Structure formats: C-alpha cells, structure tokens
Image (cartoon, rainbow over all chains, first blue to last red; front, side):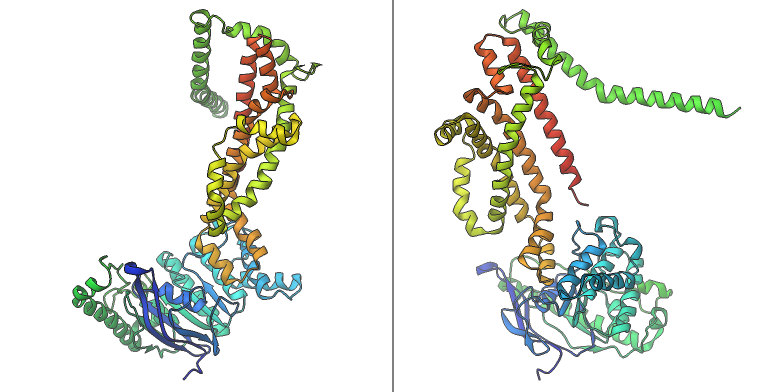
Length: 298
Length: 273
C-alpha cells in the first residue's frame, strides 16, 4: 500500500487546547504518484493551508503520517519546494538574491558561478530577467508570485507544493500565470500538489482533482480523474464534454457536502464550537455553457 | 511671440509657488518662535526679574556663539566646542548602549525563557534616573569621565533593548517559514531574515536611545564637572551668569532636535514596501 511517491495516512490535525480545541483535519488519506499533478479543491478556510503545511513539514500531524518516497516527513526539506499564497519573498532582497538564497542552500557544494547561472536560468524561465535586480516592493503581485515559483523550482525539489499560489491575483494575471505553470510543468513533469479554491484552474492544470470537505474536521473526498489530453487549451476546454462533466461532479460534491453540513449543523455546532462557521464563497463558476469562453478564466 | 510671455508666466508662477510654500512652511514656526521670545521678554521685565531678557542673553552669549570653537580655558570655550565634547561623551556611552542593548533585545525577542528570566529586572532598572546611576558609576570607576559614560550607556540602553525585542517578536511567520523551508542555518537565518526584518524596529529603538543619551549628558556633566554643555551650564549657574544657562538650554535643545531628525532620516530609509 505504501509504495506511492507521496502519501498521507490517517492524518489528523487540531489547533488550540482545552475547550478551544478545533479539529481542522480528520483522517486525511492521499496518494500521489511520481510526476502526477494533483489539485486539492476546497472552500476558503477548509484547512487547505494546514494540509500543505503538513506536507511541507512545517506542521506535524497529531495522528497519522506523511511520507515522501517512503521516508517519514518530520521537518521541511529541500526535496519539497513550497510556494506560499502570499509570496513570502524577503522584501530586503532583490529578485536574484531571493532565488539565490534558495539555490545556495540546495546546492551548497556548487561553485559560486554555477549557482549564479542556475539562478539566472530560473529567472529567465519565469520571464523576469528585466526585473532581476528589483526588490519585491517594486513588483506587481503576478511578478512576485513568479519569483516565488522560481525560488521553489530553483531548489530542484522532488515535489512542488503550491498553496493557492494565484488566489491573490487579479483574473487576467491569474490566467497568464496558469499558462506559465502549465508550460513549466510540461517541461519537467514534476510531482505537484496544487491547493486551490478554483475548480477551473484545477481542471486546466491537474491530472486529478481531490475535493476537501469543510473544516472543522475536514477530510478529502473521492478523487476525480481529469483525463483531458495535454497540452490543454483553455478555450477548447470549455467545450470539451469531459471538462464539463468533471467540473459538474466536483462542484456537485462540494455543494452537496456543504448542504449536508448545514443540515447537520445544529448538533455539531453544540459540540465543536460556538463560533458560526462562515465560508467565503468558492469560485462557483459562471453558468454552465457560458456564452463567452473567456469568462472561464475569471 | 509666444515664448517670452510663456517664460515670464512660468517664472511668475514659480515665484508665486515659492512664496506660498515659504508662507506655508516657514511662517507658522516663525510665529511660534516669535510668540515664545515675546513671552520670555515680557516675563523678564515683569514677574521674573532675575530672568535675563532675550536681548541681554544675546549680548552676553555673543562671544560664545560667534567664536564657537574658541578655547579660552577649561570651562570657558566656544559653545560648539563644548557641544563637541559632550557629543564625544554621548557617542561613547551610546555605542556601549547599542552594543549591549541590541543582542540583549534579540535574546529577549527570541527566547520566552530568557524573557521570563530577565524581563522583571529590566523593568525595575529601566525607570531609574541618571542621577541615581551616576554616584554608583563614580564608586565603580573612580573617575568622572568613565562614570558619565557608564550612566549614559545604562540609561539609554532600554529603548534599544525593548524595541529590538518587539521587532524580533513581530517578524512575520511567513519569513520564518521561508527560513524553515529553505533549511537556512542559524547564522544565515540571523543575517538574512531576523536582522533585516528587525532593522526598522531596531532603529526606532536607536533613535529613542539617542534622545535619552543626550538627555542624560547634562545631568552627568553637571555632577562630574566634565567640560561640555552641561558642565558649562552648571558652572555658569555657580558663577551667577544666568544668560549662559539659557544659551546652554537652547544649544542642548537644538542639538537634540538635529540628532533626532538625522536618526529619523535613517529610519525612514529602512522602511520596506
């Protein structure tokens, strides 16, 4: 059973203590194959960031285990590149220095010149060569996220963990970056776990979509395979039948989950917490068969 | 045909702009200073007969201001020469304060255990007046110069300590996560993340510390008789030349103001977007 590349087995995680304890994840199981692109889709506040922190090794599960290539994950490591939702670039370092900091750690034994060339390559990969010597404060959100992506890639990790990397961006930038991520992934086919609240984004990029039910005590739902041919074209996708089917199934699952949660809200609220659980709306797509394909990017 | 009037218009507009700016920027402070001097003058001719009037103060201080670097004797020097002496003394005490205060602040910010150990004693020592430290310094060092430096250092240290500690605690978790994910060594973590992230807070501490260091100088010089602005002030009080007391007060105030401005300029440059 445990021969998958990246696996979570019965992972649970709670925060707080005593009466304020809040179970965020309960009994989460996931298997990711080498070279697979998995998207985890869920509502805001459903514990997605907790899940990625567990994969990154920034958090330890209360129960269960996280394994990468059979080894137990107990701390962060250079085999997992993380792109955080809020970029997390160091504002006092230039684009180059931010990426170099990562490359220097991952390839400490390389001579300086080789490290520099390596970094330059990744700056070129994300089209930021003109901004090489700028600081994050001088860059737009999309450019910052590109730097963060280059920083993660420059460590040449086994797995790329993307924690809602595009959710802070405007729709157009988001579309452009989706294309870039798609292209970069097609070049080296790294294993990727993408966390998103955007079903279309998941459909465009992933091999498999796994919905995450709501916190408290969120867990992963059944996988939905995305067997669309690559390279995928956003416009063509909108008209593909399978695209629409998967989109419908994933959305239906999340919506039905939510409905069930609401129906059972009264007894659980008394047990879990007095705080009403409110969720920001998930990107619930334009009406199916939207008149303009562009709207899918929004 | 068109150009000359355009140029004159522009020149006129510029002059108008300059005039308005001057009016806006300079007039209010000048009015304030004028009112202050007027109040001073009225006081000196009415209820406070021993207070020298502004004109008399200038008359008596002229020599010290117009020959600012003259040295006529140990306690009879130009005002800027005195100021320089004081600044040198302050710089020494301040340097010690920063050298001790910054690492102390880092330890307090990074370790809860350390904070629990030492925060109480810091809170107790912090409000102690320079007048209380000075005799202890004299006992410890026997000489006036080192004890003045000791007093300046120990009094001005606290804002640096506390602000650095607050700065370290306020480092966003994101930056720390980056450090963890990249598996930075402790040393790299300190230089690339902790120090730059804390720098703005540290400099706020540095600025406040400098203000206190300068505040302490007068007290320290008064009690030890070190030649400087404060020593001069005390000596002229004993010689009943009250005009020079006012001269010293104004000098101390202006120098303190300039130091604070300079530090806040540096501070501004450290703010990140």
